[in-house]
Image (tube, rainbow over all chains, first blue to last red; front, side, top):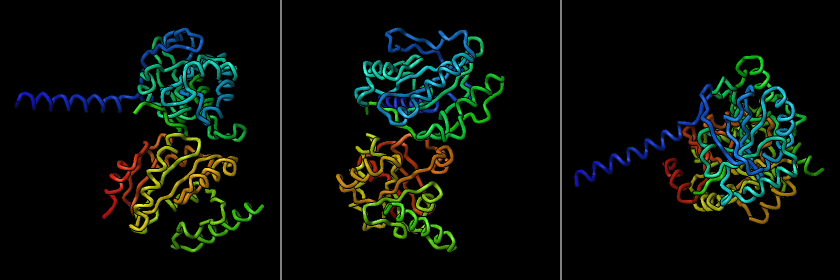
Length: 204
Length: 173
């Protein structure tokens, strides 16, 4: 009985530690990001490590259904077009569980990407293993990674700019400014910003 | 036009309130009753998030387009019904876009017969006001604040009634 109790206590401890670690384990600015491999809308697998000849990668967690994501779609395409040439391509990832987020299934991702003419991979975080590591909580949520040989270093977390509804009235374009700083070899002046978004949908 | 007039009146009420030092801005001062709704920027909303009136304030950030927000609304309505005579005040802060207030928000309020007070927060500088409301907040909705005087708690999560009621108890008495 005593053994049982101590085993149980140990289990409880382990579980709580596991959860705590998971929660606090999200990448912070300056951390090295682990490789991930996810399925793109063209059926091919895409890995972060495939990007071995770029200066960095702009990872954007986004989805089909969220109005904030939709408001940013054109701006994400523009970002990719401009900064891919300068060594910072966009990689979009849908982090939602489609069983609880209508319209965010793999087939709908293909449809949306075609409609909008996405110029970048739109990956499906099947099993929702990747977004928690980034500490992404909402869509859209941007993470800029700078490549340092084989490593990818997290250099910016947050919003694309400071006006979701109206691109022309955005007075600070956070992501563009961050990329330009990184190209110059500096850290972005602002490495973390916040904006409203749709919470990432998971099964309860 | 009528809508603009109401806004103007509200704005002047607000300026007046600010000029009168120490005068508390209460929800009642600014209430609109004829189907229009208050649209506030963060500086205007802020006083409603820090009223020191010995009441427990529950403030929920939501939007009609946010599915989990809409799903948890009944829990907040129930709380409002159960506790409105017990020094608990509920405020629903909508993040619906200004161009969808007439087309989405007002019909939603009418259709669901929402009794708690609803205001719209419209302020483009999100990086400023999200941190202002809580540094813990990543910006995902739903999100909720419960506070009484200077005791406060922030929740970036969905609630059901039992959970919400449980959190509220920490602020009663």
